Image (cartoon, rainbow, N blue to C red; front, top):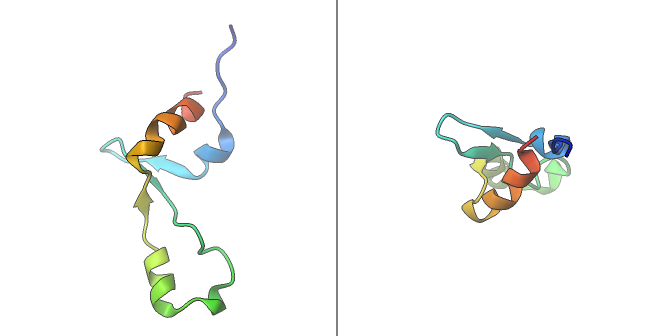
Length: 64
């Protein structure tokens, strides 16, 4: 049976840190910045981690 391929689109969006957690960027910050408040843009800059309920689903996509 052939090896499973890694979903490259997901691999570009998440990175694993030393503790084994996956960090990802926040949504809603890539465009239309002039419509958002300064506070909203500041909070969207922060890196967040993938939620534990999504980890099982994403592990299957990243085991290439």
